[in-house]
Length: 224
Image (cartoon, rainbow, N blue to C red):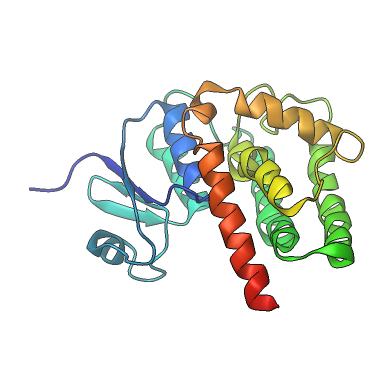
């Protein structure tokens, strides 16, 4: 008998995995969540994603889809009713994909360096990260969300910043998204986290903070 239903293979602290959960919740799709131990990957993860062996993986009626941004687009196409994720206009869809790729390729690596540096090196990295985020800030001008009046594809892709970045800032002692440098993005953080479907999937902040403190200490001690 063919496997039926929706399953997400993830890891509780992954900002990539939560994109999939947000998309499913916005669509009103019921799903089973399976938390993976990435140090001891399950047979299901290795079977459903034998190529990269990474999370997230969405399994829909036994068919696996990998890579978070691809999964989000798949969810929007597979469940066409309910909350629209991708813009209806082809040009707007292309723009959303462009800025999502920009955030993935440019901003995420810049923000990660804040986590792994200290002192003057960190201050330089913070300035570079702020400059990287400013085009996204400009995209919010006159909008409640990147998707317009409601959460859309780009909100889902960059939404991890709203919950994870303040944790990174606290752990590293840096300030990236401030009222002075990125006021529109900071205001968007609050609006995005207030959305029911978003808030319902967030990992516990204290647990996330403790995990990131331990990880930063490990990274800095190994680099010493």
